[in-house]
Amino acid sequence: MPANPLARRLLDAQVAYHLDQLRGDNLEDNAAALVDDLLDATGRHQIADLVDRDVVKTVIARLLTSAPGSAAASGLLDLVIDVVLDGPSDPYPLGELVERERVEALVDALLQLSPLVERAIGQVADSPVIGTVASRFMARIVGEVMQANKAVADKVPGLGALVSFGTSTAANVVGAAGRPLEGLLGDTMGKSGAFAARRLGRIIVETMQDPTTRAAVLQAWDVAAAEKVAGLDRLLSRDQVADVVGAAHELAVTTAASEHVTDLVGVLVDGFFENFGGYTPTELLEQLDIDRSHVQEDAVRIAPGIVGLLDEAGDLERIVRARLKPFFDSPEVAALLA
Image (cartoon, rainbow, N blue to C red):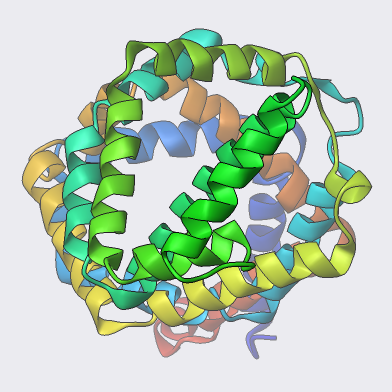
């Protein structure tokens, strides 16, 4: 406490005054007025003048480096796993969550990416592993078709034996008698993996360009839209979900802390300032379709909960007094009260 008795009484009076301003109806009025004053004061200045873009880059880069790997982030992962497993408390049809018109727009946009898909497949077609996978995939498709044809032919007297003879003869001609058809085709096509990958890519692209594909995808969505949004605990165990979420988290941690992401953040911040730096905060709120009165209302709703809790715990008076006491302890105040 200040040594001067009058200074002590002045400190007590000022603390009491500020506490009164932070309680009850006074708090709501002051919160709304404070937001209004801040918007008025900053509304005369451009964002580029109020905020240093280099400081913004540093803050975001630090958050990306520290936040994803923090203890709080790990706690959020557990929450995500619980939500994925449990689902909403009141399941609802997926169609109520996502409008069909938005799905149609997304499908149209994705189907228009067929040239990009074709180019991407062409770039990776020479990979030996991808070529092998493509060869085996196409071999399995051919094998399934031939097996299906044989199953149908077996129902016709005499035709089943003919189909079986033709299949075995083809196998003997290429010198692989008795081996499964899938292995036979896989080995043969594996010698031209790049061709198989490009051919598979061509099939995918042609399928995307087929008008029937759009109708099929939307029909599949209609079926899915009628299903209830529920937890995955019926399909997956907690460990399986945790493995996927954990792997995604580790990917985010290592990626966010990389130098390339920091550079990307810098580009994004520069882009923001180039596009919006000339706006004032009030003008930016208008561009974001955020009403000024809503900001005031939000402040009035949030402030009582935070300040009220601090007041009940006795922390509010301690904080206010700690901020004001140095002034009344100062030599200037002591000289005025001498």
